[in-house]
Length: 184
Figure (cartoon, rainbow, N blue to C red):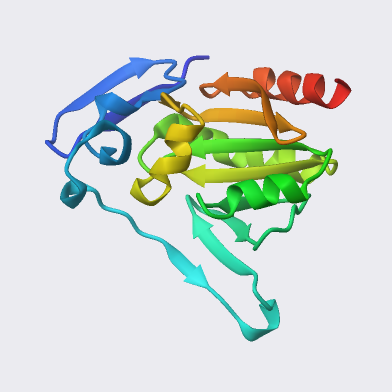
């Protein structure tokens, strides 16, 4: 069964393609952070919920999934939203655990397809740290440092180094890559 997505640009044109598994950053004017478009044309929304009982943990609702943003703590059993400032400290805090980073954008159809599957993986694989990074203007330096060219891109790290990369909405390939990294 092929997935058919219709993608509309801010100019109102639409394109569809069978079995889309990645979004090319240069193909969409809504991603000025890495391709040099106008930041004024980019629309973003983010709802942040905090509470005194959470003591430094901020719940973030993004793409209909509940995620958690934590200082420099490597949390397992969930997906943790990271930024350019929190990513490397969390990777360091993970120690010898495998870390999987989902690099996504709000407008990417394949990213939205992968998000619930990635969440499910995080709940089942409790010896792996699952992170996600919104590759927006604020996180541009980290996205460039990690060499992102398409979204979704999954970077698998071990001992603070990228050991594997999976691009596109390929859940089986991602699961295999994680298992390979854990075994090495």
